[in-house]
Image (tube, rainbow, N blue to C red; front, side, top):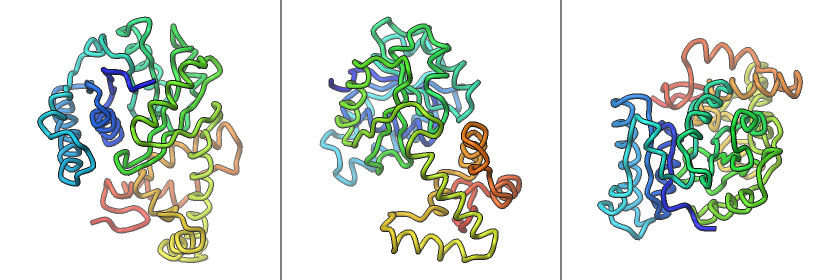
Length: 282
């Protein structure tokens, strides 16, 4: 099943802009909805900038004018009314996501699909808030979206077989590889990725080795493209902390965040976006 001709994205931050970029380059008309005019304008600039880079690198065949003509932004959920698919990409908070998804669903036609970019929250739990849970799934994109080759398709208990098949096909149309998982805390990627990262943090905390050497061990010894601590900086320490707290709550104390992570977040050392995390990004 081809990517829907019109796709909505709720939230135009780093992840939402990346998702919008992916669907634009795949040929869809994309509308991004943000909370206010300033955020919407910033989202447009973010997506347009990414599209310009893709044109410069020759990774897309369309010209920049054609690509940006497919892109619009709004502050009104009603802008989603003609979308065949809407992907929610608001911060990783269950209450916030649930409320946003309910509000989006009210604007959609009965044949439209709805997805969340959650990296760890229960897709089945979110689906319980919706009128058409069978038309909802998780589409977990990875940061940075343009460079990532993976989408985790998360099937809730209510997700229809038709949507499961369609979502995997969309991932391929976006030039990415789908990994299909059943709904469980942290899915496959976040659960394993966070487990490794938390242990790496404990090793720094205990003085086992420096962040640089721990990452080098995983890159050189296990062929990880990026070490677990540098990846944490890219994802955001605050994001990793939120996921770890959720996994500790649902899966047990083995995911309890180490004190070094809590302290860094409290100091505002959030990784690349703040200029400092386990590494200096200034």
